[in-house]
Image (cartoon, rainbow, N blue to C red; front, side):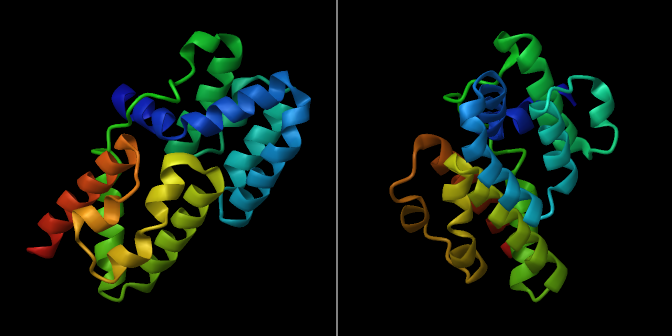
Length: 181
């Protein structure tokens, strides 16, 4: 479980650092607020509420109560990072795509087979990933191609950093398993 929490924090490292930075430098809050507004529109209501409470000075763990597991990992990572910056995830570390890839591949497969709920969930996830930027935004930019059946590694990873490429290759590996079932 701890590995999964660390992986979630690693995937959202830029966001976590952005919130901690905005707490320490209020001038950064306006830019962060734009990302928070988009995230809120895309269903991250409770996580955004918790982040705004942190930005307003609240530091108690009571703000974690209404959060799901992923949001809890992110927001608790922010709180821990404020108490001890050494606990912040490394924004340059390579994320392990094995945690995200199976879920993304499953949603892509179901959506491409006509599952409307999976398509909607993938759309929301893609918008959230785009709003938070970085590596996740790069991956989400290829969701349409993956839905349309594109599986060419070179085409899907062109211009990607090693981190994005690793995750995309993990997604393609999972899609291959699902495509053969």
